[in-house]
Figure 1 (cartoon, rainbow, N blue to C red):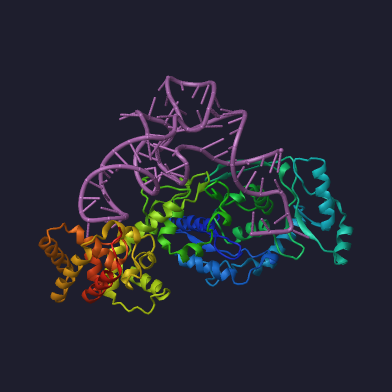
Figure 2 (cartoon, rainbow, N blue to C red; figure 1 turned 120 degrees about the vertical axis):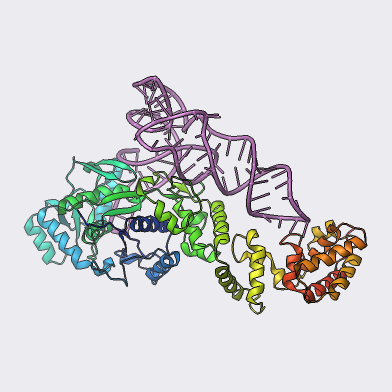
Length: 488
RNA sequence: GGCCCUAUGGUGUAACUGGUUAACACGUCGCCCUUUCAAGGCGAAGAGUACGGGUUCAAGUCCCGUUAGGGUCACCA
């Protein structure tokens, strides 16, 4: 047994941001760990020095923290299996690569890039089914190797794959997968710069960190046999592999930047709630038995199991994400929404508009079922923050009649008479005016809406007048009477 | 091209180890509600489970083949 408790890891390479596919992978790892009282480890796979991006690790951890997927062990949270950054574990990889060389399961290779290049071209010309290293350096004598090393010749260490052997492993989502060593190249384990490749590093680390379940994206499936070979050569027990289906663009190709946002921070910045994003991404490739769709993180933990993970790719459907965001918005505590709105407001053209929390809460209440994002309150109902600058032409056409100005004038007079009106008072006054003039209430309601909001839709008009207040309502009625002329 | 994976309405999923008429959700459309826009409620269209064989009393579920899509074939992860 690898460990008496389940241990899983999320092992991203810090290339700049957290991909939503990565978020899904991290989430499944997290859910699996929480469900089984296991440990969720974060390991940074920074062995490619050419692709180092300044600040990438911080951004990645920021995104992970924002999403609420907190890790039990990782950089800055050292457990007993650290360090958790592969660049800090070089001596460990060296030790095992030496062992593999001594055993004959790996060997030094001094071939130049040029030789490899021409080799590949030749093989391509011969239309070989697959280009592979020709094991040229495997046949170097001990003395030759020693001499090359002593001369300081640049080298890599390659896995010595013996051809003609089956490699079989069981995958928790793909079931049994079979390969033969015929199609496996003598993979580089240690690069010319002394850093390990992913293949060596992840096997060594997963073993040393006592990872019981390797849950990762399907793009790793075809390199898994190399890892199996490594486990076998080192005499280590295999973890359970679980290869997750890919996230897809609407055209079913692998989710890419070209066709939309892929970074978690993009979604955060657009105003998606983390719980909506998490909920959505959880449903991509997995579904609970009870078919429940709106799930908080605890619901997900309760229901999650690896054997319910699908094996086919899932299209990232923004419409559904939006719907989930609306649903979660409605379930969010009002004070939390208030905080979010204040944040958006501070970042908007209305940052100097001072409204009390009570007013803001009323605005939220009136807009909640009309928005997808909190910021829609600002962009979609600016009339709560400033008087309308213009009036919707089509609404004027439809609702502003010859007598509208006169009716509003009467309404204004009524409003001026009432003190500290509540919502119902605005309505009562309006109905009185309607009755007196023997017109339907709609004949005044619609012009009033246009006058106070400038548009034809939105919350109940008396909610609006109640929120902006008596003085402002009267001012806006006056302005409307002044500016709006009936369309003929 | 080799190898590997996959295939349930447009999309995401459900259908216990094969057993009613394939369910739910998003989206679309319609109706109701209503002072508007939404939300909500109700309803409809949309798949006979990629296609073709086979096993079985019985197949979306098991097997084979075909097709299509995807992944992967680096001193990247």
